[in-house]
Amino acid sequence: MPALLIRHRVTDYDTWEPGFAADADTRRAHGCRDTRLFRDARDPTQVLILLDWDDLDRARLFAQSDDLRETMARSEVADEPDLWLLDDPDRPTGRAAT
Image (cartoon, rainbow, N blue to C red; front, side):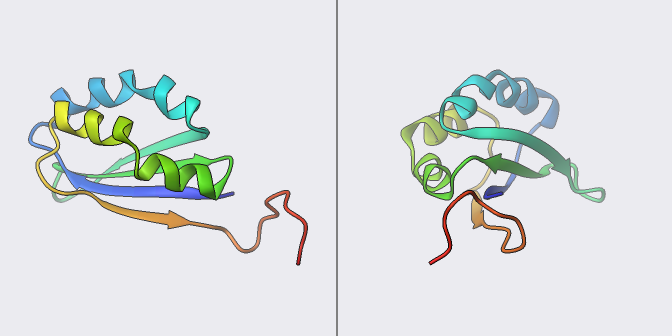
C-alpha cells in the first residue's frame, strides 16, 4: 500500500494535535486510508506522520496540495516538513504487472 511519511517539528504538540485530528476528513477526501502518528521519544516536538494511501499518485497530489500547505500554515508547525512518498514493493497495489 502506498504511503506518505511526513516529518516536522511543532512548537507545541498539545496545541498542534487537535488541528491535525480535525483535518482527517480532508485527508480522507484525498485518498488517505489510515493515519499513524509518532513523536520522537527524546524530542517530543519532532513529529512523524505515516499516512496510508489508496493510490501513490493521489498521495503525491496531496503532498503538493494547497490543503496540506494551508493546514501546516495555521497549525504549530515550526519548520519546513520532510515528505517521503513510499511504496511497498511486496504488497500488491491492484495494478496489473507490466
